[in-house]
Length: 106
Image (tube, rainbow, N blue to C red; front, side, top):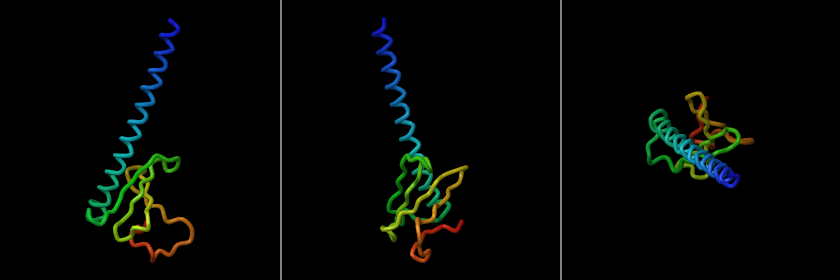
């Protein structure tokens, strides 16, 4: 009986782990799709202007989304989704806003 309980607990832990992994992957995919829709539908970008959209799990923000545009392949813009709206973080450190073509005015 003790062995059966141990196996049941192990299976339960494994299922919870798999469930959490799937949830994180779905959340990441959802954020990337929402970012794509935001850029195309709200900001007026064309598909061919976007080089890459990548989301990951992090501490803060929980799901940062990184966007790279084809005309600025050396710059990555950081976005966060909160309260049904997107927020673009300014670049870190001293920067010249004139060097960034896709900074949003918040």
